[in-house]
Image 1 (cartoon, rainbow, N blue to C red):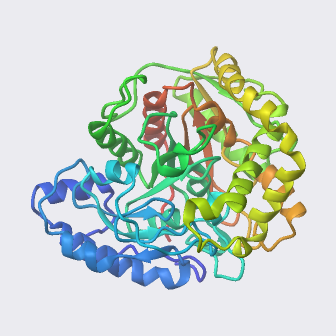
Image 2 (image 1 turned 90 degrees about the vertical axis):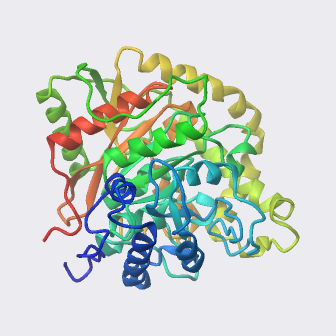
Length: 470
């Protein structure tokens, strides 16, 4: 372990197992959920003083309930839930100092689906304020750190979950994605992160209130099969009949695909050389596996960038203007960070564009579908450049400068949120400084199974680096 790399892997009952392997051990009674929970708590305590990834610890209740009989595809596996999702008895802070910390009266709608897999929840993880930033950093508080190199960003907004999974504290953790918030931290921390098709999973409370449904739930994992088993288990709880059933995807398909390659985004920011190299190597690997790879233009028009930025600003405005209605009279708008306030101000100056942007939203769905109709899957970077150091995307950076930095950095992932299409981030390479670099594979709406199948194939074809490697 280098001086600024930290992990918790060791010779305890968790070992280097993924969630599927641990659940199998529980079913065969070779280990108990309580033993797994105790080992996970010890691992979290080993790394969290450095990572700052746990927002709310619930160890006592988790250990007390770990011995109760349960069922589910991931029974007994320790996990965390992102702190923008209600869990009965725990406060939900949304990553913001403006939100009062009151215990939730009941589990949220998606939380119930998540718990149906039999997981043992140890607490809640950090996120950027209301998930608006692509790093998990705060104003006046310690950041959540990347376990691969602790002076670098772990991504956002599901940064706490990504940091704990990458560090080996737990094998799987909850995230959600409204513009890349699962895929970005997956890319930064060397994980698998899938944003499912819109409607694949039960919607969380925040998603239900939005005029455009860009937020979907999901998980961060270290293996493709953990992600696949999560979706299979979630589907047993609730299945959207408007989408093709997913079932349990257990490996690659034999079908060879046409893969469209998008190397540069519509933002005008050219992909950095190190990221470009990893995407190109992945394209060559896919060709060697028998797939056809051909370059295609970005699957949306130029106006998409401004539309998404306006919607992003609109969400911040709604929080700052109406937060007291959503969170109660104790909500303190004055404690919002400078990014949220800057976005809200930006929207006030551009609010006249909202009707046009809302009207164009369905067109983005149709345009994306037409653009990818001649290919099965699209290969692209997850991010325009390699993971930045902490501070580069901090909410303490002056808003105008931060806004431009974020728009250049996060230029591939939002397309799938706007179109509702699925996308998966995979850890296919590394930068010169050793930090992971992810690639993104996306498909048309409903094509989740195809993404999992090709993800399995890439995982088998190339051994992914592990943080515990020398």
